[in-house]
Length: 144
Image (cartoon, rainbow, N blue to C red):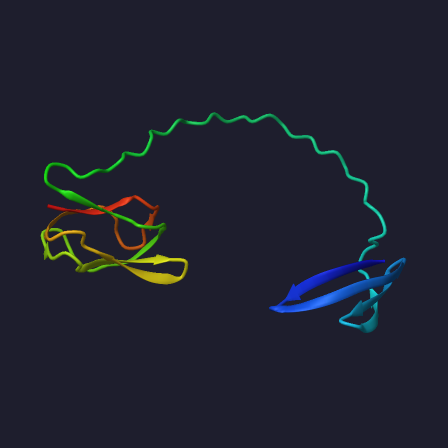
């Protein structure tokens, strides 16, 4: 009749449905035959009851666009190279840092990524905090 491939707990099973009569079916799982009971009849589509949806009775409130943060004056923005979550901040505002020093740990795709200073200087502003989600290009902090 029909052949299916199921992946259960990482294992692939080839299931061949050989015969269906009422709520009983004969199936072959990886070459071994089984008689199984079906909880509901699967031989045809069920009638669908029409659904009535009332019109919306609420009014959406416009939200202001997010503010784009950029570095000012002699400050240099340190931007996120990829989307993720800030796991740890290893410096604070006012700290003197050197180029290449790890300032944050960013988790992306279950991997920890060091976010290093892109120049030497003093941290003038930390914009993202621990636990914040960030997108690629978001400013994490500024170095003056």
